Image 1 (cartoon, rainbow, N blue to C red):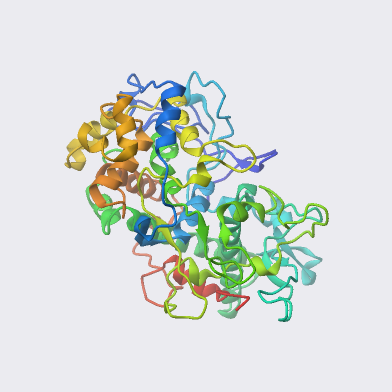
Image 2: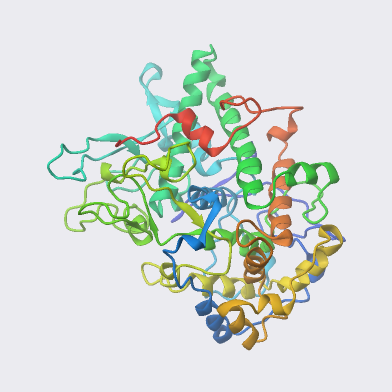
Length: 513
């Protein structure tokens, strides 16, 4: 794994990325110095799209999902768990601490406090030696940090029917301080409940791998390193072949590896492109649902208990709100009736006819964002406006300029102004003149809507995502791609590993039944 230097802040442990050689050249990414974001299309740096806040606000307001409960807006190809897996992956790759209102004269001066690598530093921190607060203690070794993560307990809570026995205390929360603060490598993973439970699933995955290695006869000083390597390689495989190819197109990773990366290029080590981080990879915001079927207690039409609205998923966390629902008498852990039922978020083969079962699909990849994201908790304002404004602040080029630059390699039609002008949101874009020069984030979502019906990214957005993720893994000398013909071994099918396979390996699918 890459070596990092810790920086402690209010956001927890922040990681400086490894040294990156800065250089310029045709089709080669540019960064100024180690730890900074870079430009994937440096020849377009002199063509930023400048749009005033008033026009951005009008376009953002038009980007609203008018019927967020309609199944017509659901994506049949993408279970809802991938929305929050995507957020977990993002927190593994990037941490930009500059504010939405902060003036940025030079976008290349913005620092990324994460390694641009799929190395799971968001869970491992600096390892048991330098981040001992993340790890369980070993009584056989003087209570030194062990090879396993700490796991927190969810507090006993009432059942769906108050006449039933209470749901007991269960080992299904993040580890927490006495004040309820999550003891994890990246505290952003405690900002909503599904990403928090995703983080917990990865902690449990690592611990299960440790158990397997011990059962296979591996112990001693190499145990943690071997477990981390095995976990990280399976995670990298999952990201490329279960996550990226689900959102782009099957086979695209193998194609890029065979033909070579044409657009995301670097001489020595990967960097984090602003076109990816500020635009293309914000695709997940369009996938968020208003309401989820979280478990048998918090689901649509459950007796006497509310469904899991997005706002509640933010409330029952330690970072974003009141984890416990009662500000006057807060316990320090998650109530056990809020433990996730993973069958509802990933396809684990549960029949649709199972009692009290509803499966959550992600919303389609399109410019229609649910109302709750137009009014963020805690007075956060409109997320679509924040995204559009961020693109202007970071001096991104228009979607058309990016697509035309990529066209010799992608060889697909660029969206026409008439295609962008479709729908109520597109009509507003046309009124503002943004159907001809379009913000990159909006363009990528519109391309997905027009070219694929919102079921996956279009050819240009998909190529950015696929090249960056492939390049990040290729550029990591410790990744599974550094090993000849390595294949995952922990899933039920040889050479395959998906998020569903990981959850089955952990074997803690639906703790409250």
